[in-house]
Structures are given as C-alpha cells and as structure tokens.
Image 1 (cartoon, one colour):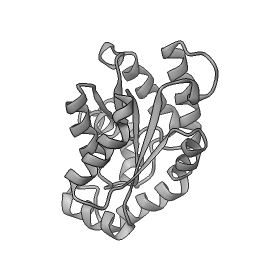
Image 2: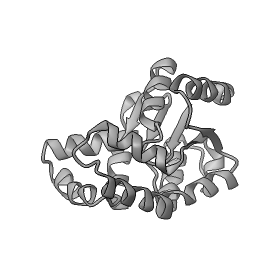
Image 3: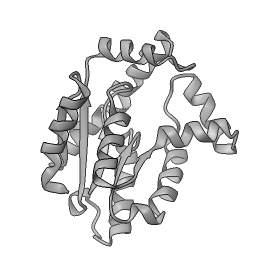
Length: 193
C-alpha cells in the first residue's frame, strides 16, 4: 500500500496517517516531522528550512525531494507507507512519480503504472484556523496560518486535479469526528490493503 495524504494544514492528515499506519503496520512518513526534527537539531537542512517555515512558506522542492528520496530508500518502506506532507506541488508530484517507478521497477513515467493512491482531506478554512490555533505551536498564529492556507491553495491544491486526472484520488470530508473520517478512509482504501 502506497498512500499520499493531502489536505490543507490542520486537516488531520498526520492524525489519520498515524492511525492507519499503525493499523496496517506500515510506516507513516511525515516530511513535517522530519523537517521539525532537523530544525530542533539545527542541522544544515534544518537551518535552511526554518527560515521558510517561520515565514509560512513551503520549503523549496529540492530540499524536500532529497529528504524523501533518502527516506524511501530505507528498508521499512519497501512493503508500503503513508506519506504526509509530500508532494506539495505538481513538480514534486512528477518527481515522486519517477522516483516511485524507479524504486518499484514499474518503469514508465506515469504514476498510474505504480500502486499509488492520493487521499485528500477537505476541511473549510475557518475550521482549519480554529484547529491550528488550538494546537498552540509557536509558529501557529492567525496571520501565519492564513498565509499557509493561501500558499496551500496556490501551490498544493492543483495536486487534487493532478491525481484525479490519473484516477488515483480518494476524496474524504475531513470536517467530521476523527473516528468517522478513519472509518471512511478504511472503507475507501480497503481494496488496496
């Protein structure tokens, strides 16, 4: 099972990914967690990424691509995974398609040749702002949150059309109780497990 979890900040991607990864015994790979760990450890990548994250901007493609490629080559990812936080742009998705096909040996240049599903959790902006403010993270103030949502709408939302056109998209209403969303995801993805 190879899943990408998409949706705006605060949609519940990380929470749902953790629950389903534990249920299906596959790794949950969060680029946000990896980046935050790099920032805390003050690694060269972390220092570069922190400036972008503090401004509410996306970390540049090449930095994320390097992180993801390294992580996908680890042995625990060989039998499946749930990826959250990547890809965030159509160029990243095109890179990721190529990486997946290279890793799987499927060949070709289209993700349709690989066993990938993209899950989109949709939640209204006002709900997202309230959720993110309640987390109490240092970088979660209303101005930064609204900027992150604007960046998401401009740069990441086109991925929905990208994966829909490839018939790889599973869309779920994320503005419900966590258990209801989890149950719908299990049902929608049960044919893949």
